[in-house]
Amino acid sequence: PVCPPRRVERKLDSRSGLFSPHFRMDASALRYWDLWLILLLLATVVPWRGYQRVKKLLALDVISSVDRMTIYGSTILFQWLLAGGAFWRARAHDISLEQLGMAMPSSRSLGIAVAAALSLVLLAVQARSMRLLARLPVEKQGRMGVFLRKLMPPAAAGAAERTLFAGVALTAGICEEFLFRGFAITALMLLVTPTSSPVEGSIAFPEVSAWASTFVASAIFGVSHAYQGRAGAFSTFLV
Image: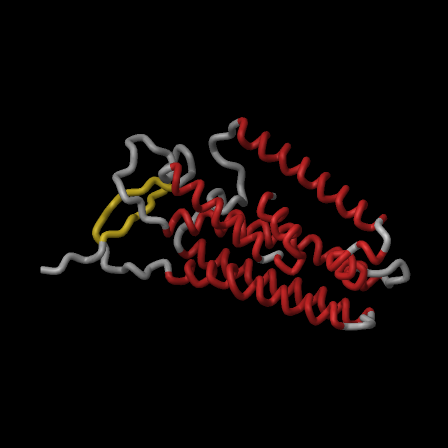
């Protein structure tokens, strides 16, 4: 008889809140097709859409307040719909809020403090880079400078435009971090099948799977910011 494909059932470890892999026989090898589809969208459609929109924006000689507000509104709608869909499918597979990075882990450690400190440092570096870019002569600001001048609301912008722009910043901070960090890393770890039996007492996936999933998710995050140029994509990958 033909044996059904062997897959991995991840059961939640109550002590750590992470996945513990347990081998079992299961014919439903395509159970996680929806997670694969969302990851494919993040790796292809999102970067393509961003690049095309920025290309169209840069080609415009003049951009009106209505144009900017349309971009802000469509960006907010698109990101929340994508994040909502990813959250729905993740919860359908019994992925917890903690595994999605939406709750504090049950086992707090020094790693949380280190991650928070590094995030603040990187945020400060990015803020300083933006200020330095703004001080450069227009002709030396390059693609990123042109993009920011056209996309950001001018000093004379009205309250509605400024509010929508603030909504874009808030949306990006929530939705992108959830999609490319919480969801993508966890989904990739869930989809990776270990090639050997799990180590007894392991609280998560094999270490190589965790590192590989984090690297791939960061690479997808960087590619999604390819519209910012090589420097922007690389800095996003590092963050």
